[in-house]
Image 1: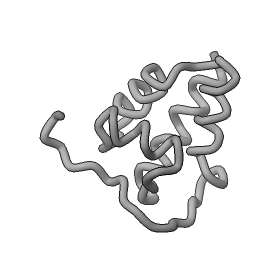
Image 2 (image 1 turned 90 degrees about the horizontal axis):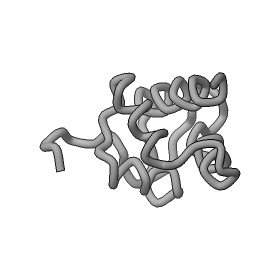
Image 3 (image 1 turned 90 degrees about the vertical axis):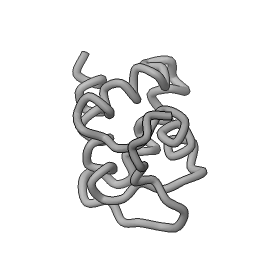
Length: 83
């Protein structure tokens, strides 16, 4: 792991950007529009805090994202959708 602390956490959270961007990311992965690694790379490149393992746990609903990381994920989803 990278030594950066993840912002993913257990518990519920409201998302201000696009509902739950985790669901949008999961839908893209399940529909083969993007793979989980490429989605994480976009998220991380935009300033996301979660490492790849925690990010995957967040997308699959095992952990939640805080508002900041949810916004970053929504940007990554929008970028991938625009390709």
